[in-house]
Image 1 (cartoon, one colour):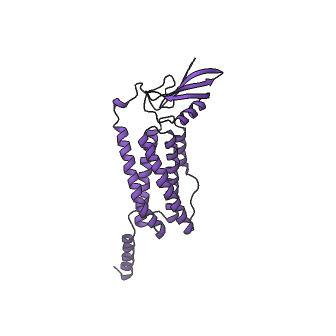
Image 2 (cartoon, rainbow, N blue to C red):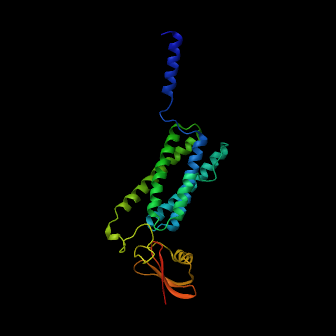
Image 3 (cartoon, helix red, strand yellow):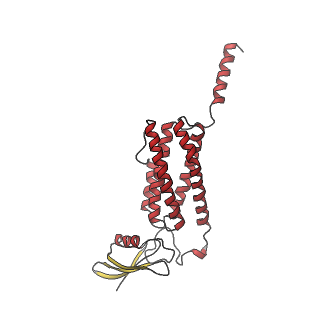
Length: 247
């Protein structure tokens, strides 16, 4: 082999060796993905706090709001110092998922858990990659400092998912249900709606003058309300079904 060709071959080989197997995102790409992911975590968790029924999921959502809110603020500070731009809106995919969650009929718990499992798997991959191979020192440090928290979140949601999967018929409502509310009958079951939330949901169903709300031993909120000029006894179950009987 001629010396010139040999040198060219050696140079090409050295470039291949120096390149990582999976190149990390550029600084701006990392910021875009991290910021959108973080905003989605907070926004979806706010919905879950309001609409989820399982208390462990509500607690997880509160942790997400706190931890990702803090991480989002820190990322925004760093990007400002680095003269980078932080996206202010979700991308189409995340916005679509958020809309589905917001508009879903209770229980939303399974949908939220599935979204969180995927979101944290993606986040851990993103932050691990940038923590290892990132091209911006400040953002690389941020990724290194944040990835362990993301891994902890991933473990938390996987445990919740496993617990949800292990639920047996002993805790299944007496009336067989699906994710679609059963409008014909109130379904007994652990009800995580607060009194204020129950009143608001009943009002959203077209009732007024909602009063005397109390949760019975089947987990059903019962009270009095007015609809179409009639006083009715009204109930709200854990699925969000609102059923009334004329008095």
